[in-house]
Length: 101
Image (tube, rainbow, N blue to C red; front, side):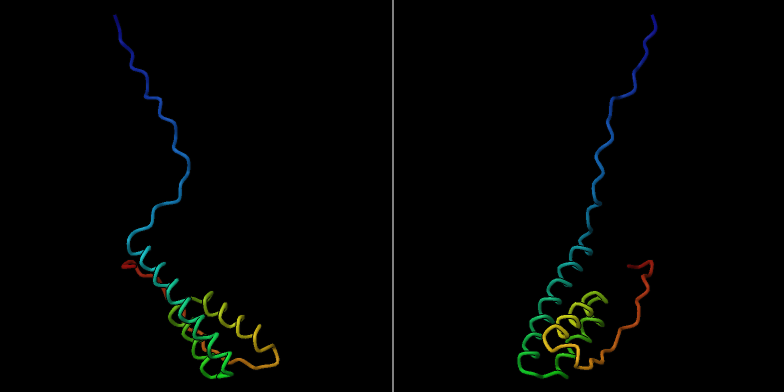
């Protein structure tokens, strides 16, 4: 008598997004908090008509946040003040991810 073992009937699991590491979750939380603080500061500066301070918040969005955050803040400022105002902002240099990240 010969026994033949059938391969296990395992169906492939549905594709899921990889779980984030604690470091990635912390970075997401930090960037969300930073965006909230900078957006609030920008709104207050725009309400006060303090354009140099508004530019400072926009620059911090680019430098400490992300290009997208900086662009969002700049677009918000333009929407409030209008396109007639000239905005000079400083873009942060691109960061290269190292193997330590």
